[in-house]
Length: 399
Ligand SMILES: NC(=O)c1ccc[n+]([C@@H]2O[C@H](COP(=O)([O-])OP(=O)(O)OC[C@H]3O[C@@H](n4cnc5c(N)ncnc54)[C@H](O)[C@@H]3O)[C@@H](O)[C@H]2O)c1
Ligand SMILES: [Fe+2]
Image 1 (cartoon, protein in one colour):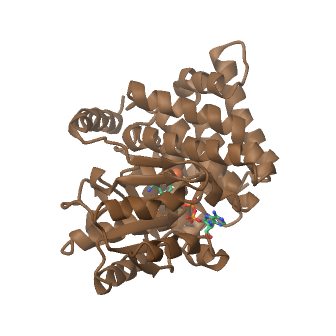
Image 2 (image 1 turned 180 degrees about the vertical axis):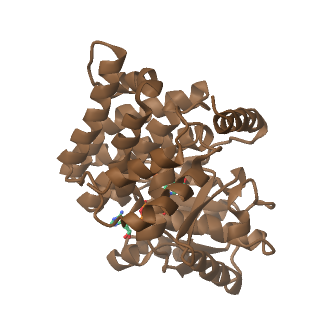
Image 3 (image 1 turned 90 degrees about the vertical axis):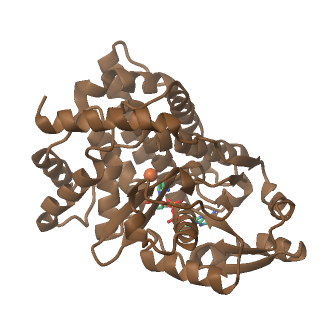
């Protein structure tokens, strides 16, 4: 083992032990088609009278948040709306949402949308109660000092699982860096899993966000910080995604498929928020920060490449995932390889490309450096990657 590997493994062991004392209480769930209509009554029951709803322009345009906003108003709850969250939300988004929260004298936040509005809402909540710390100062691990205002998460993609996680990922547009901020205080107290909100997801967003959920399950499961519970959730998510994602992609109105994908995304979120992610995300976050590649698309393309890089170090775990996915093979190695191929096949069946056109050769050293800075020593990956290996992997992604 090199000195760097020793350092990473010692750090990861210490983090696994530290995690034993965290509060891992999961959000209280409201579930089922149409269940978002129960949210105003829940908010009312908490004595909350003024909320900020954080969403994005695309969702406002198709009117998805409208029935909820109207129902809140009908229930006598004042609702200010921040609808400018961009894909890969920025520090400015968080600051603008916070300003609106303060001006409108709000007491709670509803995060309505995919991972972008959910993370913007988490950042906004953290800034409201921690005004002396900038978003950048809270990025990293355990830098949120005070708990957030009540946060109700309503995912409309399936997805990031942000409704279940202790993370908020915000982009610094000046440096093109995506900064993951990890703290149990960021975990929403309530989540609404309403599949009816996801039936209108266009095919490319259904497919790529679904592959993001799969990446969470896979990276959590093959990492070294699993608990029995996170392993179980990761396997369940994998089974659900292999069974239902293509169905949701083929027929967006298939409510059973949508419901199962929301559940898969939630389970995968529960798994990775404790067991962490890996190099797929480390690289994907940086392609997002640099070239604004959508998060799910980046993960979908990078996932099979990184799994191949892990090679033997991940075979046993990948073979378990193959079993969960219903992918056959005679030996552990065969199963692992068949599982990676099944991911490639699933991507191809949903028209997801297998490379990026945006990567510039000159950017590769810094991209690799940042991906490794994010991942090492934090992510308990099966095999520690070096700078030349990471550069070669990114170069291969150019097609
Ligand atoms: N906090 C976490 O734990 C975590 C985990 C993974 C990813 N993320 C972050 O989440 C972000 C990505 O989130 P995402 O993949 O959910 O996409 P997104 O929130 O960026 O949304 C993508 C697009 O889909 C549209 N959309 C969303 N729901 C829709 C619906 N029901 N119908 C029609 N259109 C809809 C949006 O308007 C937007 O244009 C990234 O910034 C990523 O870093 C966070
Ligand atoms: Fe992700």
